[in-house]
Length: 168
Image 1 (tube, rainbow, N blue to C red):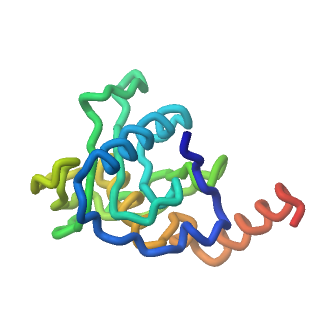
Image 2 (image 1 turned 90 degrees about the vertical axis):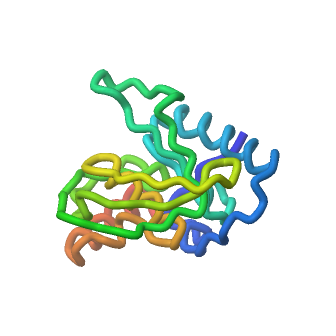
């Protein structure tokens, strides 16, 4: 079973490489990422979070009752945001930064081009929660964490709390 890497592990700062082979190895990784995402109650996970530095991520937004359905799963390979519009502030958390949530400002509507698990080109216009999830996960592929978007004061508070928690 894959393990979710947590901050401050330096692997999370790596820039992920494009996926070139859409083979059974990739499919197995995506399937395993889905299982760990659900086990950890996540709505998204990127391959770098399980120490695989490739441009692959999953998003599965829960329904109104908080349930996630496999048919709603987005398997996103080599994503690129091609349009952004509007602004939204959303309370974000992260599997790699457990038990920490903070309001982050992002684009409210985005257009993303990507490939599915078979390499077939896809396009989606995402709004609100889904747009936030896409931006959060794509940031991971670029070595960026949501805590990097905090103000200096909030970032210092986060780092202080982390040190106390882990007694560095």
